[in-house]
Amino acid sequence: PTRIDPADLLAVGDLLTDEERLVRDTVRKFTEDRIRPHIGDWFERGVFPARELAPELGALGVLGMHLDGYGCAGSTAVAYGVACMELEAADSGLRSFVSVQGSLAMRSIHTFGSEEQKQRWLPGLAAGELIGCFALTEPDFGSDPANMRTRARRKGAGEGADWVLSGSKMWITNGSLSDVAVVWAQTEEGVRGFLVEPGMPGFTATDVHGKLSLRASVTSELAFDEVVLPADAVLPGVTGLRGPLSSLNEARFGILWGTVGAARDCYTAALDYAKSRVQFGRPIAGFQLTQQKLVEMMLEVEKAYLVALRIGRLKDEGAARPAHVSFGKLNNVRAALEIARSARTVLGANGITTEYPVLRHANNLESVLTYEGTSEIHTLVLGEAITGESAYH
Ligand code: FAD
Image (tube, rainbow, N blue to C red; front, side, top):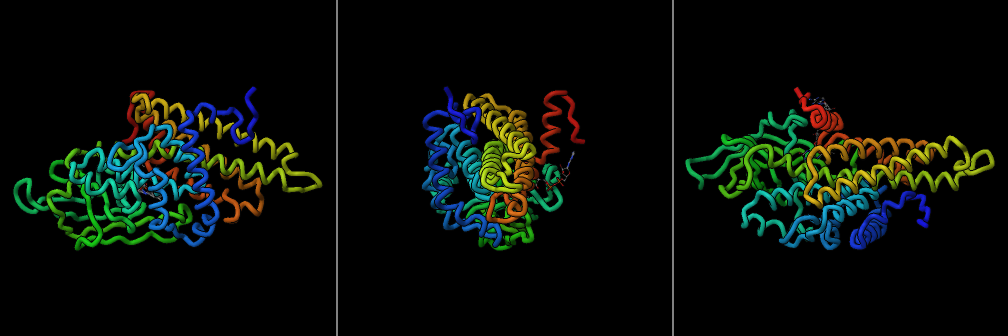
């Protein structure tokens, strides 16, 4: 008979292949050794030691993990998802770093870049020797990127002419750290992607401070004041919003897995705490109200895990549609946030500190609820998928 594991009561993990379980255990070990001992402190100080960690994440094989060639691991979608689950069990900031580097920056170059651009950037990004970011959101346009104001125009006539880029991007993860920024801008032909490097005259990156969420993650504003880019800085493979939106769909897939990890971490922290914390002469795990909270958390963690695995298998079959990914993103982030808040109550006052992960996860998940398509936007995507009516505007 199947063993009863309180952390995975339905034994969803048994549905993973040996290779996927190996990825899970390897990434979990890395986070236990390298992240967990420090994450509370990093969160409190608002730092993420990206330059130190990136080569280690590269060696672990999680940067651009699901891409082929150019030093990338070429793993299945589920193996990549499982890695995200373990990374986000440690912290959403860590998973965000990996998502932005692999699914947004590298994936855009891999899918839409020239052979020269791929050769130049992908091996270093996969190894974590280089850091990338992806800049779509602007101060005035988040959910509605089609109206973006950042513009690129040709400096002269013909395909060989330089480009001039002007505008600004906001809320850009890894922005000030990046060796290469994938910047989406409006052109005469439609939206196009540009590779922008630090040190180019007119390009500045300023970090966002005062965040109460994703504190162990660098978030920046990027400004472009008539930045001159060479003709070959444009990604040749795509014109239109389809470019950035398709990369975002890849990153969302990592999120719907990652949040299962954050949720599990909150649930198991609450379970452990409830078993050892004694009030009124008995462990609080023995009170019916606490058990109800723990059981609700457990049900939702397992359901989210099954949702992630179903979407992962669809993706590996080549059958996953954006609506499937919206289903997972909406359901799993929302479930994780509720679990984190409920876990916080079980830990009482201890729950508000960085010594335990629960409020850190809850606060992080507020960003995860908003970025990569807000919960409202995913509701509308799903509403359109089931009714055929678009309710955006
Ligand atoms: P808005 O679009 O202004 O939305 C505000 C509210 O209005 C939301 O509740 C929204 O759901 C609602 N709303 C908007 N339109 C509709 C509608 N049609 N119907 C119903 N409700 C609607 N962006 C990047 O490009 N790269 C990054 O690396 C990146 N990293 C991020 C990191 C963090 C920590 C955060 C917080 C954000 C990051 N973002 C990044 C930006 C993120 O993608 C945007 O915040 C997100 O798209 C939402 O945009 P907004 O914040 O401008 O909110």
